[in-house]
Length: 343
Ligand code: NCD
Image (cartoon, rainbow, N blue to C red; front, side):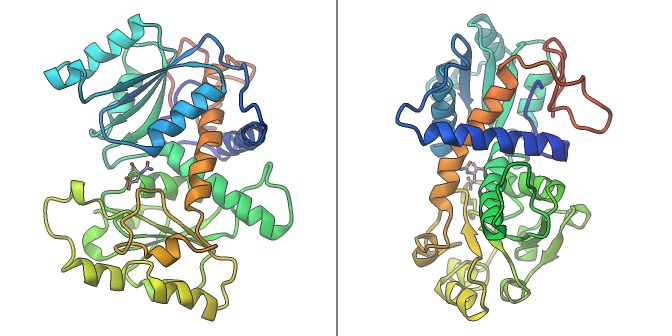
């Protein structure tokens, strides 16, 4: 396996392999000494062109738990703010001997660009590109859901998928790379996905996505859901007014206290409430919902480290025993180290 750029072409087998490896990594996080020697001597660069708290820290913790050396490169305060191009930055990192580059960029497609050129011969992990994709977030969300779903079924999570699980993804879908990556991955894992949003916050072409679309939050809840994923209203990406007022938004689309209560009255005692963070409390999610026993917000953060350990491990451990990419099986496993294959 070579790069982790998208969930769209991740096969079911690839996805399950990452989630299963993440389960093993989670066991390391439960130990007193939270460290494995697996990536000793390897260098992971966190290349962040956009603000991030949890994703950057999570990748740093993941790399360090695998004993890799970590270089944090924030675009603000670097030569990038003096106009250095992605190419020059990549070549500089290559000269420093980076084995993996974790990139977050405001431009959709920047990680693909990095992975498809010969500027740098490192594994590229997409940590969020514009409004396009955020594959490790979707994988940690799936990991969190899988644990919940397996616990309800009374089975172990290893090897399991999300068949039969009903997931609502609600809010600012238009600007959300989290929603895009989740729709593809959840579909691959067999979940039944409904997007819930005002028409102004749905992208053109959404009817071609492998999911249902609803404009009515309450009706979606009434129909039954096992997980509700609330998306942040991404003010920084909005150049126009997409809804009348914040009050109106939270009443119609937010997960407020009334909707939290309605899960009980509707008899959905096992439904979880998710959010990738950072949360706008009082806008897309109320504090009571975010802090309720149903909320998986902190579990998602915790699971993020295990999932990113798994991704780094599978990309960098030099395990080339898998057969070379089989047609239609995605590209996660088994690419020879010299190829520029991506997933
Ligand atoms: C998400 C992101 O950056 O896309 N956050 C994250 O990675 N934890 C979602 C968001 O910013 O709303």
